[in-house]
Length: 319
Image 1: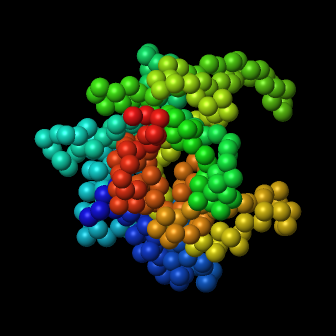
Image 2 (image 1 turned 45 degrees about the vertical axis):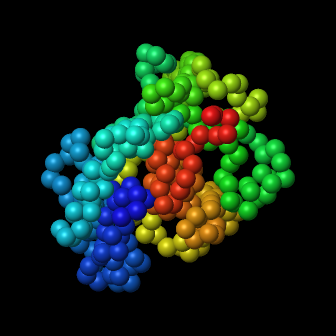
């Protein structure tokens, strides 16, 4: 099985569940209702029949297969979960099935950021007191050339990477190499007055990069911090028909409800065309497969059939 398929296997059962969901008098738990004479058996659950029916709520609550996943498909889920939890090592190594880490990376395993398939958190302190293993810093600059302007216009690129450090800061490196640097957070206490007159004190973060190992960053570098998302329900989102999203977009708030939905258009590598983005903090990836393979490349440094060749997020400025 190609690597890009393996890294998706942990969430693929949710997609399978979307196709299987539904029973009774409607087209399906994820489909459009056609008969409202009686409630669906699973109507009260947030994911319909795909909602996990585990009897205990504990630290593994986000790590369960879909509630309607057939027993014969659970093998795929378990294999995918094993890949999700695997610790990768640098090459060459005695075990070829676990090597390929880096050379620069953010974590050695998917679960290091998405602990127990849940969301991450900001570091408790700056390096070296703590690391930002479940927090990612995106890096970009304004377009510098006509080609870069055009790539943003036609959606073949979602941003222009920082020329030396690439599209994200990688604060770990394999043996013998220097990591790119470290996320530095300085907090400012800000007093906010609530609607009822009560005042509260909040922390306002300011971000910078300490100890940049490969020279100064571009003077116009923009930084965008991202906390690792929780992993549940991705296949339910993937099961929504693209036309339904477009139909309900309402970018000019024509219905006057105060909501102006604007779908994000991104490049779909497999389709070689623009698609609707659904995954990531800013809906920057069109499919679970592309999201997973992109994270494998950028966060861990491992290429796949979807992102072949190269060395992760390294640039020509990083020999």
